[in-house]
Length: 150
Image (cartoon, rainbow, N blue to C red; front, side, top):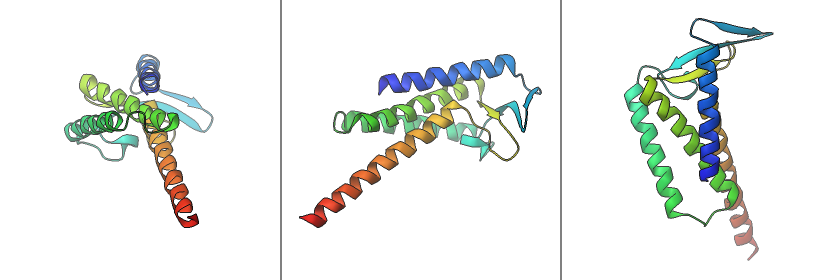
């Protein structure tokens, strides 16, 4: 889990450093139908709710603490995939928390006009949550089938 979280955090922070360095605010990189531009996102993931930076910062810290508690409580009882999923969520959360602490907003990239802004931290969180949910659903499904058999 720690390795997955560290990898997600490192990839996120490296990509944001590259965006800040080579794609300054006001500039865009046009590539076919895509137009990449740096966005400072004070709202939630994908830029959905704006202007609530402190509540989202506190919420991110609270979520991180809850996830750490879950990992501590259930350490070793879940498989590697579930642990890796939690690592993605924690690494992504830390990446956005770092931005909020030091920049006051999360650095994100707008890819085009029809997709919300995002960064690798958001992507890690979404992949982690999706994987964890899929694993929980699979386990519940298996338990239901086993209970019906016997």
